[in-house]
Length: 149
Image (cartoon, rainbow, N blue to C red):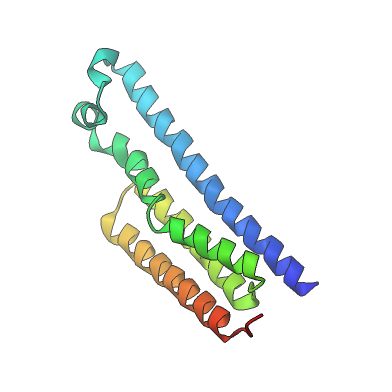
């Protein structure tokens, strides 16, 4: 019973990270399109993604930069979560760490997409990364200590 609850919880945490990525993606297009419309940007000039960076103020690119970031280390979160679920190795420690990771990444994204205070953003990035690497090591240790079938 507890194992099923923990497994369901980890799926919800994976879904929360996917939802965060979706929200950042939507916000990126809201920021870009509102800038393009209010400043009457010529669509012909937007053929390359580098043109967006050149034409728009830096803060309009914050969500885009964060979206790219969400496809870097968070990919390991998805992999380690699925590995733990498929191996039946989800435990309380992993569940708590996964919630910590999701929350820290959410705060990191909020900072990155809005004020982009680099020092504050980096602090949340480092803590979330440490939690993620802890999750990787934890799953590896549990997996290696499990009896072989």
